Image 1 (cartoon, one colour):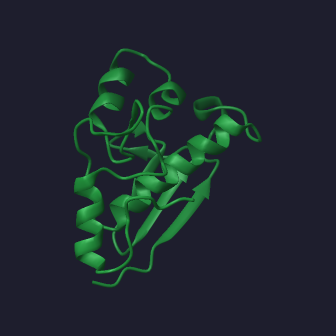
Image 2: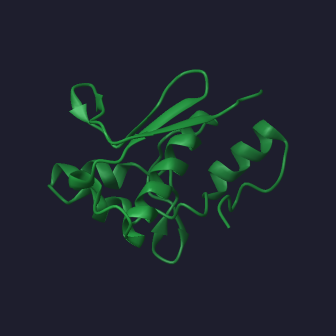
Length: 131
């Protein structure tokens, strides 16, 4: 399978099913993230850049064929970037998006995601994608 991933970044509001979303993966290898400061923090700060990195890795994970899954710890108390269950539940309880996303580790996939990427693309170790 060949995918030529494209990631777009916008400061415009993005909606999915009528609700604001921080990112969306589309067909044909396209994804985008919406970096609205009022939603994800102050541009130029390290926490803002970490959130942008995490959202980017998550959406590109979808482009590469990964799906959301339950909580899977990959390092310390951080979760695989494809973990979604905790974010959805926390947001229902009005936990800020920044706090939810900060629990994800954009530098490491869980075993399941890493194996799927390695098998699909028969290439290098996908355990750690951002050095």
